[in-house]
Length: 264
Image (spheres, helix red, strand yellow):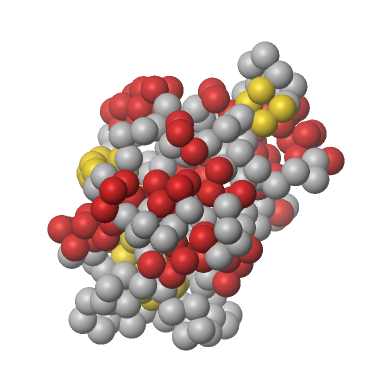
């Protein structure tokens, strides 16, 4: 098997383990490249059908192209889409910087959905290489009764053995893409022909490398208008993937504070 085959096989194994061990289980769908790859892998893992709900925690500030994509592929892939909405920014921690405070709305929105559906497992499309704090995650990562992440008390994971504690109020975040890199995602999208939002492709010398809310996400300078060109660009760039995310240009601890509190 080549590198992408190995990553695919590992992710399929993780998804099947999560489905076997955690019920109720749901998958987060942010509409970006990573979560579309994750959905594609779930369809492969379960013979073309995603056997658990797909949740979109909606800030109501996504790009129109993202909502159009969501509606189209919910029907095409026959997804059980569950929508949840986020509270207003005024209810968020006022000590957070502005962009992080806006992003924190998703933390509260996700917590409400987890409690509403009494979820034992939540599948999320994060990768270790995307941001330093995410490198501290486990594949099966427990969250406490208040949805908080105890960074210093994570279960060991040896030989693909994943801990699934079942204490009251605890749920598990499952990360099937944790070992993937950004360039792996794009190479897999190219190999598999996975549909993505066209905002990732350059128009007038700009493209989005990471998609979030309109008010806290900016495009980068780029001439990459095809999958091959995006891959070539990533082979040489030194610019961070999240360079267009306003939150990542604020205080250094803002992202970790959000993650500890239960952020995606």
